Length: 342
Image (cartoon, rainbow, N blue to C red; front, side, top):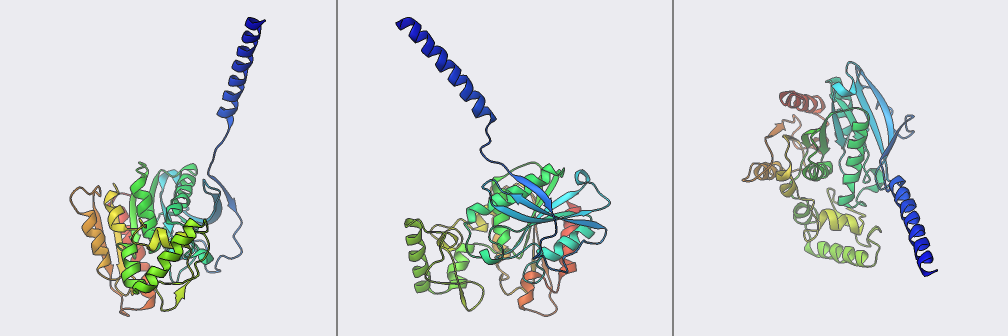
């Protein structure tokens, strides 16, 4: 009986192991899904199909389940396999269809007219979610767009980030060396965001200390996603609401890794940087800190170019979004991409 019971136990155990193995093999831990959808209700009326291109809208589910809304412009003369696709990431609180404070909207139209497919996305810090996200999470939104592009048949991908999107794109490109990612474009790029936030934007050590203390308390209380009881000065005189996780991962010098001078040198792809001379948000010295890092000893960057576009109005609020230089910006990007044979 003992031997018989032992044999039966072993047989049952083996069967259970086999069943478990089959079940484990059939399970799905996570995934990225996408679908084409009707034009969303909130899209700006002037965001229409570019000349000689189609415009379609997508809903993409990132690997953590976050919904990434996107717009895809495709030149009619080319197939996805025969196109270079630009994944476009907006600036702070921006949208893919915005054309005022962010370059995202008009670049969809103008770059598609230049023969480039554009997949512009709304990240998890878009619109009302400004100053609420965790910097480390936005990579999932970019990842979802990149994998969707591959599923659609694109084999040549360029990452383009504007303003806050530049650090998100740099972080992704530095940590994802996929062979189909061919180049990186940064428009209105800053250098070291934590340093800039403390010394150029907040500009008040008492206020900075209050923000840091409140953010650390929120983190330790498990409430880092809540809006802090103190507000943060960013690019305007009035202070703005901010969550603990945003402050700690973007703005705090002690904990943030949103430093372009660190990540840019770790990107093994050609890079283009463009700044409007009228930009009053990004100071003229900031792109040079990135240039210095990218050209330093041991940098992985094979080549980097910096173009400064003159603004006839001089310093003005629209300079940050290239409001007066839409066509020159698109031509600068397209010309550079063609030199890269993309």
